[in-house]
Image 1 (cartoon, rainbow, N blue to C red):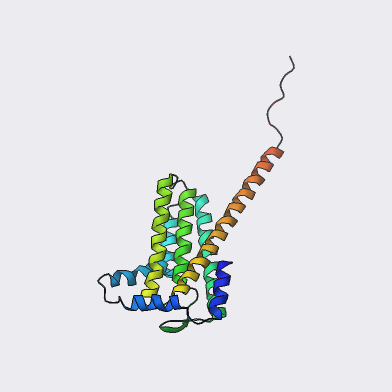
Image 2: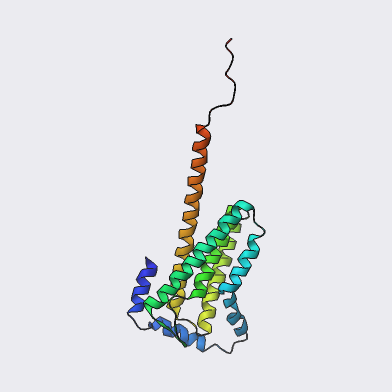
Length: 209
């Protein structure tokens, strides 16, 4: 809902003052020493690189989790990316330094989906259980996503609200896919339980005394 509201406002508005202020800020720090790091950080939102990384990561997962892992990223990254491209055309907002459509930021969307997916499967597989580990991993994920958004603004590829839109749509796509997978697992478990209950007992009857 927040994404739809933001997209509607963006469609019928010029870039906001906060967009222009963010652009002016990043244009004013182009010569900082860490500029190459900021530019390169966008790699964590590059669809091609993420696809290769996720396929390699799936090789180390158990068979049951691997299926859901690949299904998650197929639906969340593929579906979210398709919605993002559709939104670019429907909203029609141009990038600050580029004549292409820019809302939402696809790199930020991809980074958001990937971080949520990795956290979900790390928890589901038992790698993340302790609260401190969950909190630390979540903080690291936030750092990565915000870094991608900053990188896209630093290179004048997106407005601030494009980045916010990518975060919102990526979060919605990932969360919706997680809920669908959880629902699928619950239905499957319930069906298995019913099937086991319906099987006749194979134990011999107790002999009468």
